[in-house]
Image (cartoon, rainbow, N blue to C red; front, top):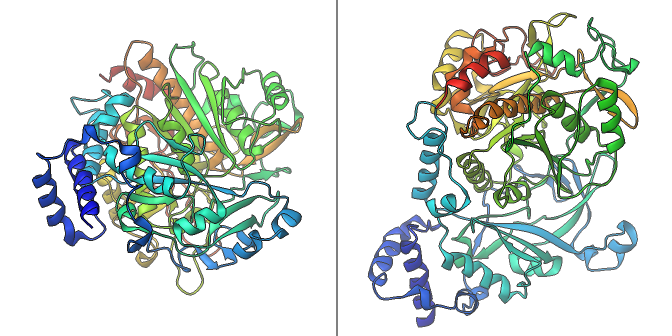
Length: 628
């Protein structure tokens, strides 16, 4: 007991030295934390501690009382049952099955490890400090606008106590997990990525883990816990969550329209007859006033791909030659296998069609994991300045508030470094992936698109068969978050909309929530995008098309600033709402999508159907040039 008290005091002392008051899961212990930390701060010299051996490893942690992690994880939140999840995964092999030879013979599964992320917790004070710094470097009205932090400065701004990191590492070591190739701590010391054998993970987290298979082809398999997991209290207090242990990825399906009955009456510059009437690079350049630009050294952009969405260089080459644009992938992060993934080809072909002069990275992961993606970004010493991500889930499908907060912390840190993160707003209108329900109807907002710390991109169609005015794509995602309050940067816009619009029934949505999308771009089914896949031009639609187009435009705007020695735009939302008049307002349509569901109307000004509108590069460029 004495040893445990001494070590506990050491942890608290280190927290004080690093400006971090650890947030305990029992608020009633705050007075004890503060008192002991102050009394021990002048006694213990943490520099003389051999952390790898002294912290965590000597504790009798497995005999401690345990804390149920993500306590709002429950059947109504994630699972219909143990065997079926809301995100269309089925349990095909439970814990007992995995212990037998059945898994290998039935599913050809060789790897019996699960990759998880220990997300280190920040104090409330340091969370507030992060938010304040993000606003100060991102608000054009701030004296600190554009003064983004580098990796070391960010790490020092809100440091995770080294004693806390080593306590978690000691816990892993006590379970035989310590090899450098299976335990990786990121640069900021706030994410620990670990590969754990399934049976070890079950003992470590006191849970049951099974193999889940996807409902939609092609078949995919993942390991996930199907019982609530727990940790010793001394470890649980240091974490938000153990990510990718309980949360399920959404199986994104891009809208593919082989036969197009409407299309548009414009010239097809692509040497593919199948592109006739579809959105092509010249259509976008014409509508959004996108010019040709010269390469700017140091400018960059990226697209994120998951779940087998590889790209084929031959398809990219054919799109380039046929549509007379220069599409190349300059950097591959996470690898690629030659394959015609519609989602990845859409992203690559059109972000480059907009900005061919800008270096493009493709960041790939086998599973849709926000945590794996942000972990890669946080470790990138030369990050891409603009990121387009066309994946997401409903807010209601997230496993817990702590998981959402862990993701938001990383999004804020990306913004502080000067990165612009854009997410597609979703393709199911106001009802989301789950639907609005039958007896207890409720709109289902999106995440991360509904996070204040990303720029959410909705979808539009042309209002006629010509290049010109746009209307809301009826299935473009948008609405109001049930998790996040209305942020200051859009407060006036949201209040005006609520006062003037013809609104859906108030019991269906949260009038005090963060409104999204922030902006929009063409993406509807009236005239899909012409994408070359498997050697042919096919029609593809959705906000998955809108997002890379908007990202390419902002990357081009970054070039204006970088070319004269200024910083990139970074987190975009304060800039967007302060300069809403630089966007082309969309005033037609609504995003109900589902029959008999009234969505949100597009009206003059911002609305939760199309945001502040679609980009006008000429207008935006003049404003960007004038920014400090």
